[in-house]
Length: 162
Image: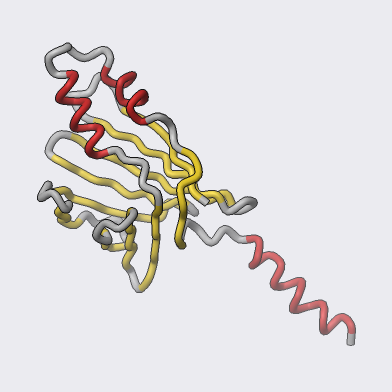
């Protein structure tokens, strides 16, 4: 009789230990000084184009206070703060998306094992967000990489959510 009671518990243990991925509601707990990160990335640039690059990067790289990630029926939806949700096919296909200020992007999302990879493609470059959950403490890291032929090198930083 005792073995019948233990069997469901033993079967459920590996399921509970699995990483559920980045789905859920997340609140910011740690962010670098993005102004410093941007200043370091653009330091090698010509003094004439540096302010333009700084303004563009500051506009597109915010430390959002909240992130909501949902996966349902072939769609991944990501909502940053109170902004409009970004709906993308879960298979990685890019779709057109227009930000609140009217700027147009191609956005995509796909799972890469337990990580969610989101990409924005704009005329002047690309931003990749990699969402990774540490299953032991349920911390979400958002690793951001911004690349453009106009930048001397990629801009990289990480945000942490719980």
